[in-house]
Image (cartoon, rainbow over all chains, first blue to last red; front, side):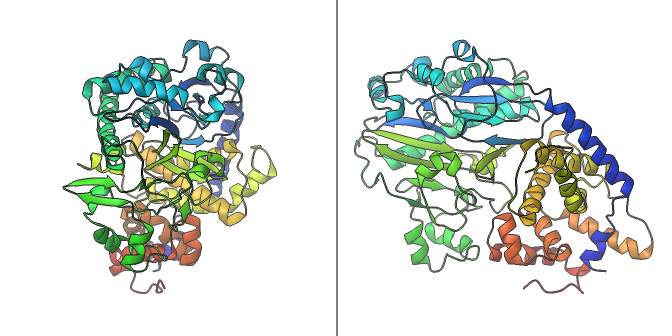
Length: 380
Length: 162
């Protein structure tokens, strides 16, 4: 017997087919009128973390969308399936009128005390070095009120499950491995994002905190790898430079050198030929002393074909093209992108970590991402 | 554009993809009831999102991916334990063999299931599957090869991958 013949034995009946369709019709109709919407400011996927180039030890950061405005999130009906739509375009989701007054967007520096004078300084620099869109005299909050602020929309299959992911996403933007600070970040994010209402069980809350600490550590490693602690010049990073990316199913700690990575990947992609070619194209990995570093300014999983990938394009998710975010070999979607683009003295770290899929120019954030596996447990 | 659940386009999409989604979901869920739920949720997602597709292949690829994710999440969120493949597969000798194959297929890693289905059942080439799954054709062939190795004993008569 062949596989085809075997599959033929999985043969739904006409009754089944009709039953599912009838149920589908009923549910589609029901859900069309009962969408529940909440909008909160949130530091979420595709948040831009603005870090001043002068930041030395640690960094104060703020969370903005691509226009430097707070990011809105809408949670829709709890019966919806598990996939999130993520777009920076305006969406059909209406805003809760007073949400901005209830949960004004602040930078983390307003909530989390700076850990050093340096941080205090960077806060000031940060405020004066926002992107042009948000540097027009309006505060981020004011800007959000009056502009066509971009929105993230996602439907929630299970609110509680999604919270964990979203908090992890948000938290990852922090650059600290300090547990106390992580705890404050967690509280902040929880309040800002969900009004402290939706995480009800201790284990989920604890896991979210753990994720914050774990991912903060990795962020810090990456940041330090990109810039020497004492350095202020992001040398070697060109504003217009594009990176070569490729999709790797391998967690950072699964290989210890470029050569090993090459060996793991060379049969996977047509455009990976010799090691020299590979090394030239994807010179972003470095593994030394048991630590995984980003060399240059790129790390991550992305374009299938290893083609040049422009941060600006991804920054505007509407042009995050089909194929730019793809399946990883283990069936998960994009796990991690970190990118920075210097704008004057300010560096915009684009951090996008999610279990992503694509469709029609939109990123889709899929829930229940296995964060720990996706990140190799912080690659320690 | 599929934006109206009652429209002909939805019905057509349903007819085009129902069997495929049912079989794929069944490989994950391993019982009829959960399979029906997964299929239902997949189409519901398509309706809700009002997606438009470039062509039938694009549509199928999207639905397969959504179905796969829905199944995985259903399995996770409910902490369900896999149940034996029992209902819907008759028990004659011939079908007994089919059942064995299905059981083996269901135990394949997720990343292997769908390429196997698309290649062996739907007859897509590795290049076409690569486009659908956004992986390279060599990766598809690699996955198929892995699947063949896993299913070596029961696939003696299958055609070659390449």
